[in-house]
Length: 633
Image 1 (cartoon, rainbow, N blue to C red):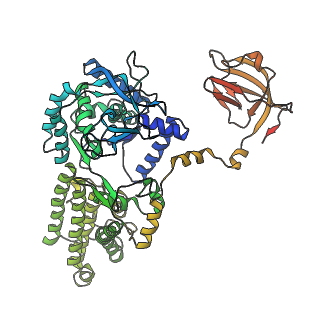
Image 2: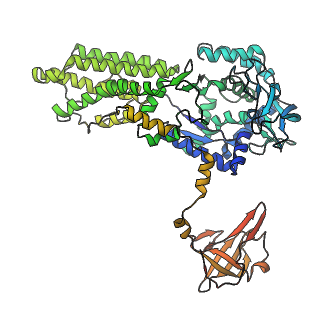
Image 3: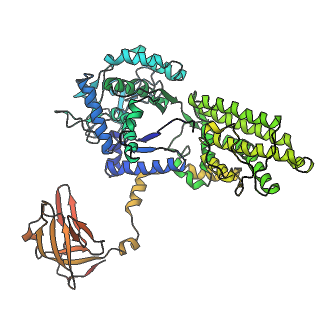
């Protein structure tokens, strides 16, 4: 909107032992689990109007390939060393535990529930063997620590370059991000392990390490690059990603405070070690959002759970507005329902929405829905000039990631607009001085346009609605302060932009949003079907009359099967599991109403039902003689 060429990317981080363990508990594969989470997250972001140019997944081939290339470059540059790692092993659960599956007392601050990778209380990065009184979070038993050979990123060798980069960010990073990064440098950096004993993840592309995967916090940030690659491919600009990661760009990261060390120490060190990519320009490390006097808790249903928001009937703009007001840019903040209601009603409804609705309604009523015009006077030009001042302050605040203050500038402008409207008194001047009424309403129509531009990053639905009513294209930041709405412009149907919230609505919304989605129940429900679904399947008894191999394949067989009153051709992947002699004459179970499709140039008119376990395949057959073509129900 400010005129920069930008790409906004993100994605779901899908590797690591927590995923593997959670999938095991739910009795689904990691692919199924992460696929479900990805879809739920993507739906939430879409509902919120979060306009990712690309929202990717670290399980995609493009990410695996990019990560392996990235790793090998660091390895070739000599920044990866081999060493022994003492890992927690739970004898009860018969597995190595991820860092986060071990809790204990922090050796730095004494916090009793510190995780094996980081203490939430003091933000110290940890290894599980540093914890006092460690225990497995799955079963509560004390893990034993076993030695295992792993690969390490040598942060010690990278410290001088990293320190120089961090110093260059003084005045760019917020004070608390800079202070935290400097604290890590001052303490001295040690080699950091980048491999894990897991099956689920990106395989280490080195000989003798085939049974290990790259640590999730090594592969996850590389997802920023692979997501940009995916975006470039999708948009038909295959090499465009290079311009953002290797050209003249400024990269902004938006993260929670627990990820500050990873984005100011670990990730930049990886980039320096690789040597081919740009380092971040800014790291926006935010504090925590709490809820009504306490921490958000899924187990207690204490908080607002976003997958429920579409059911509330409240526009996503209202949630975006209050959440922006609460952005914990410098300190932890707290969601309060009473304040949510008051801020929506007083600032969106009575201030911003009120000015736009009054202006449009007045034009609709007194000027037949056409924007009036008269020569502007000093007072009109003065308020237009005010929008230019607001615009420049707004631009500076957003560039420096003071997003909350940027929104306050929008509200400041709408307050100025309301005062201007009141002072002009068009309800009087329309009768006493029509020329004054025309000039002031022309000014107000343009002010609505300027507000719509500034609204767009925060309130995109309402912003689009204002442009639609005005009959104009969406504006850019440079348009603010210019007269972009033409005289006699026909406006559209006037709508109320923001709905007022009462106590009854709040209670209803609280009940809806506090519901916690149980993914075990969700997976179980997805596997259930109605009888109507089952009744659509036409499953019958058939006999294999003839079998032969499909030309130029090792796995496919072409079968001629009889249903009694008709014959079908079926292409089945059975060549590695059954001989032709075993199949010919055998009665089988056939899904008969499957849409025909071509496989290797041959038409397949159905599907044989079989059971599959690991590498074994067994055809389903009737246990007694029964007429061909008989229905299974």
